Image 1 (tube, rainbow, N blue to C red):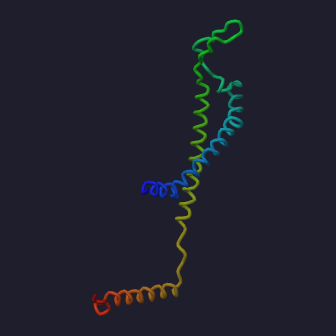
Image 2 (cartoon, rainbow, N blue to C red):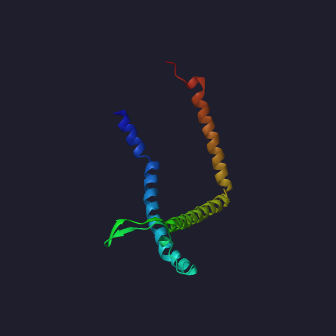
Image 3 (cartoon, rainbow, N blue to C red):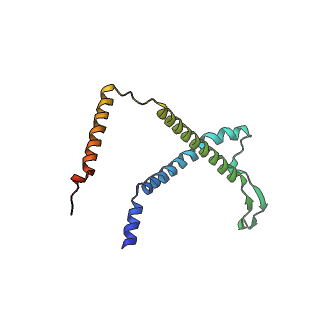
Length: 150
């Protein structure tokens, strides 16, 4: 029974939930990025390189065997265009994440660089009084006369 309670404790930890949320958001972000690459970036890039679609780029290693209009053995191709497309997708995702992390880090630096709010003299005096009273309270708690003998 201890195994299951330990597993339950692990599974409902905040970090595991955060990770699950991150995976779901990451999958959705992957869909957005794929659309960005396929629908927005690749068409102009294809125009620049004479309307070539990366996903169609391949090297034919062996012709298909066709008899009576029926494919007996399919063609064997090395689809390097799909690989190029995956590399472009990766570079765009990496750049987007880099820009996001960079922005967050800069915002954190700005927040950390803000000066601490000024404390007025009255607050300083009250803090000192609090510390003195706390010191007196701690001293009376640890004095030998206040300790019970059992």
